[in-house]
Amino acid sequence: MDEIARLQQMIDESNSIVFFGGAGVSTESGIPDFRSVDGLYNQKYDYPPETILSHTFYRRNPDEFFRFYRDKMLYMDAKPNAAHIALAKLEEIGKLSAVVTQNIDGLHQAAGSKKVYELHGSVLRNYCEECGKFHDVYSIINSTGIPVCECGGRIKPDVVLYEEGLDQNTLNGAIHAISSADMLIIGGTSLAVYPAAGLIDYYRGNRLVLINKTPTSRDAGADLVIKTSIGEVFSQIKI
Image 1: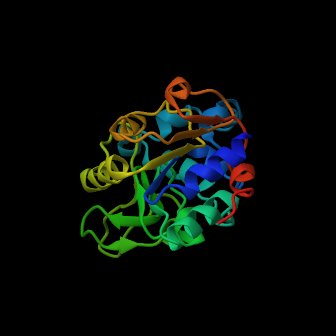
Image 2: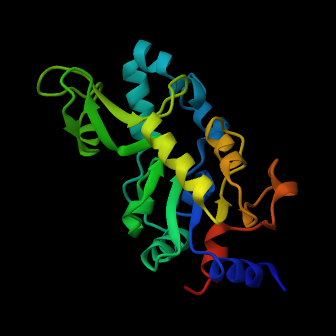
Image 3: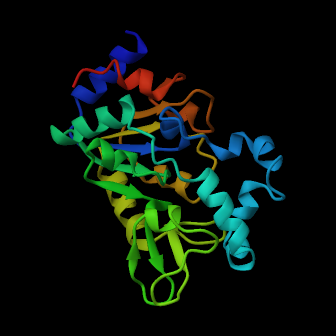
């Protein structure tokens, strides 16, 4: 039995699937993974992305932070790909119970997914650090320099920066979903970013699937490993 047929069989036999996804799910929608192209960014910025996207840098150099953020983190023209669409359909028919994502682009919801745990937040949500008022993404896009609320407070993207902890409610929801799943599909992630990658340790089932173009540290423990594009895989699944 080939890999796609095996994956199809496992999906057909499951009733509470959780999908855990990383940057590889978004790159197929045209959103680059900044970790893999540091060289390009270093030609334009004086600091590597991991430094700019840290809590310390945000506090000390907000102008430079927002220059990078507007330039490299907002991809409003990106559209859901075959993986996003297939996962939304699986949820619609009652097969998939949750998506746990490290991505911040909102594409799972754009495809129709309802139960999405965004471990690292979302660029679509922003809030005033002073009064707490919610601001949509266009409050960032349509401003220059440091975006400011009507009250005078700074508007901060609701994304988890380096040095910041994950939201506890989101984390708890993701852990509950994964520990209750009868199938866990991990896609588009090298499982190198913690604490997010550690969440898969909560899975107790025997249908662990890894879909990634490159090897991961968890391949040996998976029930099925598919080393190709995640969109290509999901485009072949019958739902």
